[in-house]
Length: 193
Image: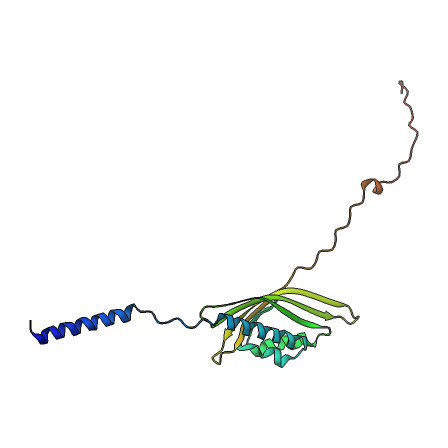
């Protein structure tokens, strides 16, 4: 075998080996930012609740993405930030303490671009007589990371807890319901009758 031919063989073998190594190596996974993202979402949700308690529509709406969707209880799907704003403004116009919510948990996708948050809410309104109606419920919100690294709400759904059942009436003793017995004399029947 000539020297030039053996150089070509070694070069070809080296080329094949490098290509195999490149094909077998995996790209490094993106850094795991889930803990940082979770903290950012918790902070945003807390600020969102404070804006809701202050009945600040502009601030409350700043947490939604432009194409967000809202799934209100007993109502149709609401799409788009402007349409969602109308519902929030009506809610803020109601007298009473308003809406507050607390995060129970946040789960961020390993990819770092989507997350969901769930928790509880308290929505208290006041009627014209001053009576407070206090609705408690739960929610789930889907957050999407934006190109600038911030998180915005992509989907929002909530529903009220079941109303507390009225206490059952305590059964009264059946004897108390009976009319007092009146004693009538029984007529004796005669054997002939």
